[in-house]
Amino acid sequence: MEMLRFATVGSVDDGKSTLIGRLLYDSKSIMQDQLESIEATSEARGEEYVNLALLTDGLRAEREQGITIDVAYRYFSTPRRKFIIADTPGHVQYTRNMVTGASTADLALILIDARQGVVEQSRRHAFISSLLGIPHLVVCVNKMDLVDYAEERFDEVCADFSVFAERLDTREITYIPISALVGDNVVDHSDAMPWYDGPTLLEHLETVEIDPEDNTAARFPVQYVIRPMRNEYHDYRGYAGRVAGGVLRVGDTVTVLPSGKQSVIEGIDTYDGPLEVAAAPMSVTVRLSDDVDVSRGNMLVSTSDAPEVSQDFEAWVCWMAERSELTPGARYSIKQTTHSARAVVRSVIAKLEINTLAEDIDAESLALNEIGRVLIRTTEPLFFDTYRTNRHTGSFILVDESTNGTVGAGMILGALNPESDYAV
Image (cartoon, rainbow, N blue to C red; front, side):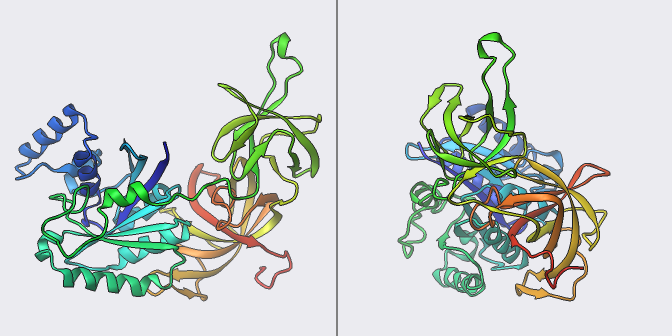
């Protein structure tokens, strides 16, 4: 059965957690003891209705403040599809958490309060979703019950968002009027909005086309070299990892990066037995026909379609550190697929202004939750595709070596000539 990963994004109090609770409740994906628990909590808090947001707002601070802080993951399924939901925070302070939760999504649900319309955080999250390469956006105009289910108000919000969305690199945008609180157009069609003849949210989630991960060139970052110590396997050498793109087949010729050595795939092993073919995102162990030098951080790639190999590249970076800023000359540890190296920020090309999507070319640094185009040089070559081509090989994180904390998340735009005019 197919799996769809989607994230709920949007501003504070737009109803993201309530929507997830409603989806789980109306699709009968809640255990009886969970339902009894949130019913008791809602009654103890004096609320007039069962607060379904409590299903995902699990932290004490989240329940006290009525906001989402951390990313909450939930799983449910219908007869047609399995789902993994990332309920992400809407507060600007926790934008970095939103980036983390949405980074692996196939689809983003952007919730907009019908009373407030499109606000800054709606635009911020829509742009970040586009930047993360999420191919499908669903704009859920929520709280339609509080605007008397007015079709005119729904059309106004959609028109406002559409103007902003013209500047986004997003393939498909769908608009659905809903009320997460009472369930209108979430799982079942709403009698209160006869003017809407489109699918319910669940119907759309069940039928939206998921982009396959095997339509790119073969990419296999090596995570671990397997050399069993038992006598009967003393000649066994396998390379374990997760297929990050394309398809690996027994008999295919692959190139090992960074050495450039070539070999042929002799076998593909899994816990359940050998395979002839492995596709993204499967985790497998690959055996090669030649005794070549392969270690963690290396990558097996398609010989006919190799990735870029460079120490200098340009990338979008979302800055996540509270106590420091990203500035030229700063040094970090960089982790890209299974490869780790050291890196230096050569320059900040521009900082993005979220409301206008204009680039401030005079910016010299990035602060918490800011996004900008940055040039980076690494101590050794990385092998990567552009993020648009492959989200796995085109992404990276920056780590502060003094604290071992992740301070930045990046999306690679492409390799750069070391003598570029951007160099410092």
